[in-house]
Amino acid sequence: MALVPCQVLRVAILLSYFSILCAYNAIDMPAHQTYGGSWKFLTFIDLVIQAVFFGICVLTDLSSLLTKGSDSQEQERQLKKLISLRDWMMAVLAFPVGVFVVTMFWSLYIYDREMVYPKLLDNFIPSWLNHGMILSPLHYCQLKLKIQTIEERDGSGAVMCPVVTFFKKHILQI
Image (cartoon, rainbow, N blue to C red; front, top):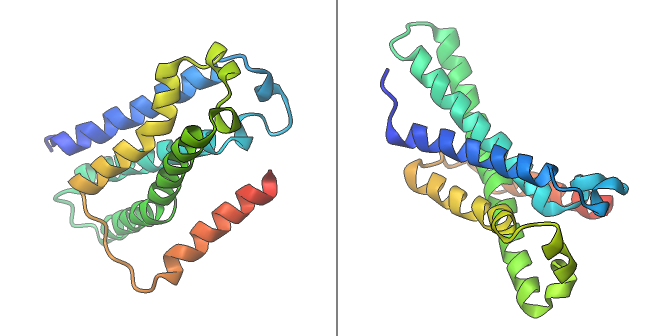
């Protein structure tokens, strides 16, 4: 029942997301008191998605450690469901949303900084927190893809339909 480095890495990533979310929530910004609060920002939604995803990864790791050597078919079935949920979440939400947020943020930032991140926000959000919110999802998802493969699913519709639904809901919310 020894921990392997990738399991320790996933716990560290989860703690990193919790610290970024706590630091962001501690900021007193006027935008947090308006309709939707932090939930109207795709970067915040992405951080929550990533934290939930890596929470599921850690839960999967713990479950596999605890059920290792067990003969229970029920525990095996539950573990397979958890692994399936983890893989689905990576393919449908964590990776696509993470890449989209990073790509769009930096593309718009290069084009016109005031459009996506006005200089006024520098007074509220420290630069280390901004970079943690924007770049962490991409780097951590790439690390996740390097250390563990995802089972391939049959049919791209099973993956693309929830992705499109997520983005439509976010656009309609705004």
